[in-house]
Each structure stands twice: as C-alpha cells, then as structure tokens.
Image (cartoon, rainbow, N blue to C red; front, side, top):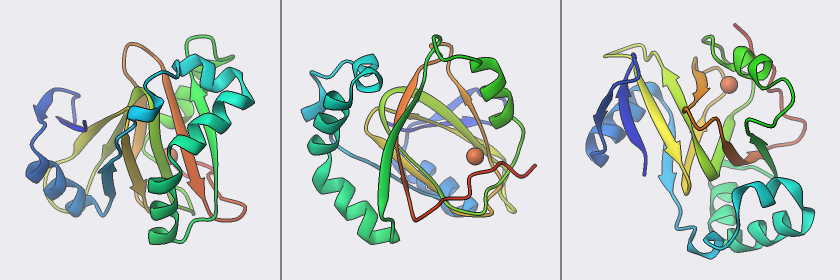
Length: 170
Ligand SMILES: [Fe+2]
C-alpha cells in the first residue's frame, strides 16, 4: 500500500483520495497489483535466479500486459538494490538529488520498498513510499528523487519502451 509522506519523510496519510490528489498535482500515475501469486517467492531469490524471475513475470502477466498496453511500453526487466549490492551508496547518491529523465521511469515493486519524492508546480512537495504490489509511472521530464527505507532493499520490475534514456539529469 502506498503511503504519503511530507517532504521531510514524515508520514502524512495512506488515504487513497489524498494520495491520488498529490499524484495528479505532480502528473504521476500510481496503482496497486495483487501479488499473492508471488507470496512464496523470496525477494532475494528473484535477483539470484533467472528461473525465479521467469516465475515472477508469469505471476504478473495479466496486470503487466494491461500496464504495457495502457502506456505503450514494450519491455520489462527486474532490478534490485540490497545491502549486498556493490557500490550501493554510490548508486543511491545518484538517485537522491532531484533529477528527471528523458523517458518514463516505471517501477512495479515486487519486494522491499522505496521512496519517491516530488516537487510539483502547485501545492506542497511530497514523498511516496512504494512497497510490494505498488506501481508508479513517473513520466519523462518529471522532476523527482529517490531513496530507500532503512531496510535498503527493493526489487522492482522496470517497464520501458525501446532503448530507454534513464540517465539522471540534475
Ligand atoms: Fe529517477
């Protein structure tokens, strides 16, 4: 379930209407998938094994197909960050400052959690905690930043068009 935080990371709400209002102001799209079919898949196993990744993709086939056709995406892959990730601090330091990309940043959270921050043109800045089952579409050119919760673990499906341009532009 997505949670709304203020720009200092303090909890504000898990109310759907408030969260949707904030997302509309920032021009981003969110939603939730039921990932019960993934309940037996340990998060770290998703990263470690191609077979488990295939299983995870099979489990989300229907909602993934809907998301791809809604936004015109063609491909997906699975990525993750854990405390064991080499150069984790360096990677996080690249995502933490406000930036944008030339293509949409789409993440479906399969395990763990992450926090996206937004400074919309109107209204208060806010952050969203995304956790297992949540998805987020940050459209191209939308300013945002990203960091991890204390558990420092996130495994997510990335969904994209051909040759995505995900270089962070600060
Ligand atoms: Fe980004």
